[in-house]
Length: 186
Image 1 (cartoon, rainbow, N blue to C red):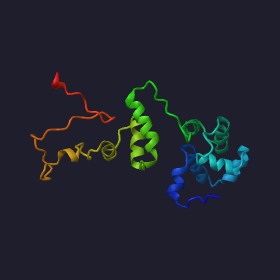
Image 2: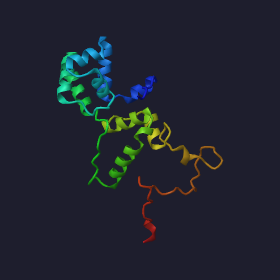
Image 3: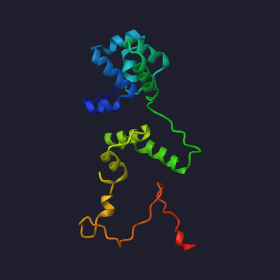
Image 4: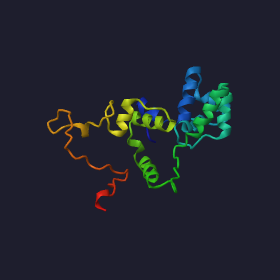
């Protein structure tokens, strides 16, 4: 039998959004998992595995039972339902027909999500939510510093930070790494 990690950060990363909220609600009220599981008519092992994303997304019935168990209403109940819908531990990203860049993004996310640190994930969520990211978070995603300049591009050969206007700038590349066609060659 595999032993669970005692590292609190590793345990927190293993939770689904729904599981994290349920654990916080339970802790704030001083309630135990086994009592909640009995109220919902499931085993405590199942409820724990569901929180950790080892049993798929919670069912509508289980979410409604959770809402009733905690006695939450209105916005908090809607938020629990929303978090349950976003707690599938193995989501599919249908990118067919969305264009090559969208397919690239979906595949890179699937391949690299585990290597992203918490700050980058938070910045990406902020982008998806339409919330302006902090300058530091945005800089981490696009390679710029907090002032919006790219330190790698703005350094002079002497390292003074003053870019030489005569230095040719490399053409921008698409997310797939292809350089755009040369417009002067026609």
